Length: 325
Image 1: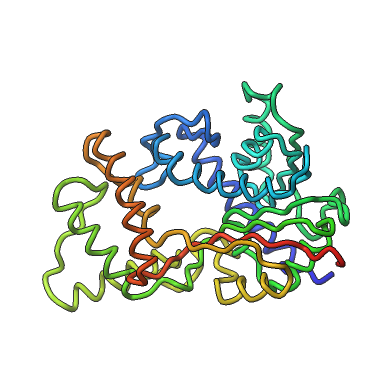
Image 2: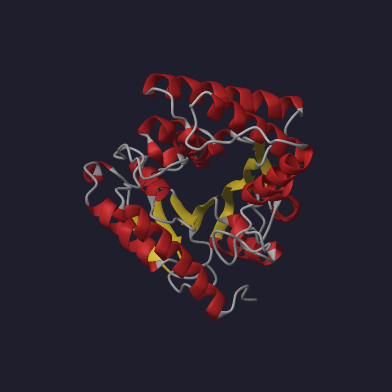
């Protein structure tokens, strides 16, 4: 089996997410879809308010859970790769699945176990285990032992996609499912950038956004803002490096989708959003207006993507491992 990252890269990747979750927890973050609380430390993130969590993460959970019901199996075994602090794995266990959450970050796994142990719904949920380890070398991941493998915002951290999906196929039982919900930042277009800049300027002009975005004075300053925003949308630094972690953006849509289609029998594919999650946590009108506007922005985002006005930068995919494999 080809290993995609050397040990130093694996360590750097783990450390980045160790640091991120430690900072978030220290500032009041509760990574639980049912028990999260308002957290003003998040200045532009859906985790800022439970209503945004339900609107964004809750919708993604619903899609993943519904896909897994196609297994038609009680206590189906599900592996979530890159589970982070465990909120999706926890909710899937509450839905009755036998869940294993895996992540490189020891701190994320420590936090996931903490909140799982405090779960007031613990007696009602399916089995739940969390592992700190490498997807390729973790010894407790046995061949043909899972009914489904789930990636929520994790698959794009892997390069050499054929190798990754070979590993998924190795872990899945024949007929098992792969469920993927991923950002695809290689699809950010200039049109997306211009629209998002416009929306930022209009919202901030009304005092309804977390940060002021003044109207650019001339075409040169406007272009500078567009370029800065393009890097932000692609999660890149001014030097072209990955902003979140060493292996973020290792794969985009151009790498993921063809490989998924080559390895699995496609069952479902849909585009998600282009800008919605970049705004809802940053709204600063009164709370009732913020929630109402968040719902509106989600629907407008969908409409603009369906019309082809904007390029969707997140997708949802469900595939099946062939029975004969």
